[in-house]
Length: 81
Image 1 (cartoon, one colour):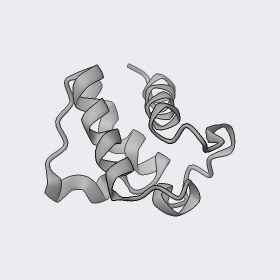
Image 2 (image 1 turned 135 degrees about the horizontal axis):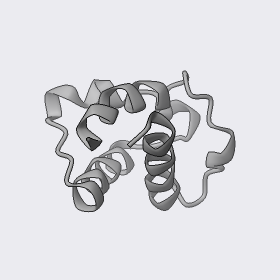
Image 3 (image 1 turned 45 degrees about the horizontal axis):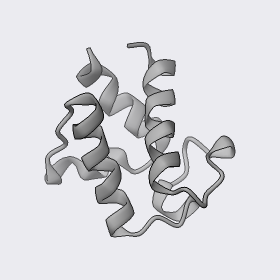
């Protein structure tokens, strides 16, 4: 998958988890937790959806790689291959 496709997949998951949030204007370099007011459970739901939908497991020690949309794309793009 290209970075654009990976970004779209991530945004779709975020939109499904954080249904009340507007994901169309996410600042790609801002903290997702802060920008979208995600709590710990929302974040874990995103990680679980990555595993469920795309068979991608993110170890707990690497959760920091998912802090921003940009860092998600950078970290996850090779895993989608």
